[in-house]
Image 1 (cartoon, each protein chain N blue to C red):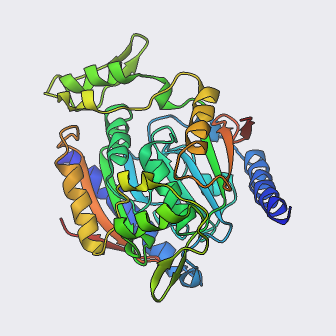
Image 2 (cartoon, rainbow over the protein chains, first blue to last red; image 1 turned 120 degrees about the vertical axis):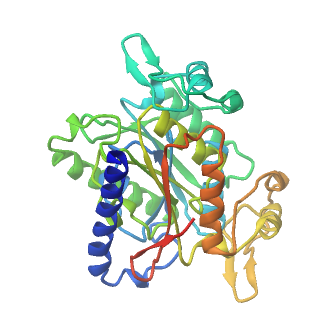
Length: 191
Length: 191
């Protein structure tokens, strides 16, 4: 009951915010489908990152692709191919960030946790531990979670994978960055 | 030369915007890694969507996962599992939108286009056509592009896939929506 009430509050909050947004929508209904800056960004789902804000991007200007880690997964590459082939983006930015959750675990840790329980685990000095043992799944053994240890290397690996993908046009320009959650600054990663 | 100049301008613009953002960073360096609203959003990469704005979400509050279509791909589900299991999100929103590029093609069209050329195609009344035939790749035959025709159905399909995934905790609450690019409004999709 208490948890349900909390969840209803979360939903009410975003729906109220959306009513305000729609009331002040202005002329955004005239925006074209292709991004006006011909720009696509691949970055992490991390809650502390607001790429539109930290890159100064307004509605209509750029594609934004986000997943756990900002990794160049098959699905991120699917999205980038659609972005260039059908919607004309010519510049892509790959942005990972400091203090990323993807640096706190690896596939083996995640698979052991999920085999025991699907509920949220806790991170202590001894590493990740399940709070409950309420039944998990071995399905995690078949999922690559794409965690990483070296932040700069993860950016370079992803730039390399995108640059060498058979469906990526060599004419697309690609840059790599690290976003510092401590300062809000973008640091270039040479490739 | 001219294209290189344009691309440098795009990069200069985002880097200048980032300097301004970092200068006014305030106390955002104190934000915790887990999303404070225990909320994750899965939506489309479309340039006209700024989910932080249209849902009233500030830095630190919610995970944002985005790909072409906002589809419940394996990679989106990987991200959602990490979001709940390691970072404690309890409510997930799946948001597709009107006038989506994913409704303008299908796998067969995309594969034919990419087999001929990797460069950007054009959409006319007769459908998608390549402008150049500068050499493509048959690699597209092995990629599911996850296009769709029925917008409400694509939301329901994705909710169904997430809800029934063996690694998704049944305790997570999931809602589906359509974002109207014409009005900025969120429309609930019953599931």
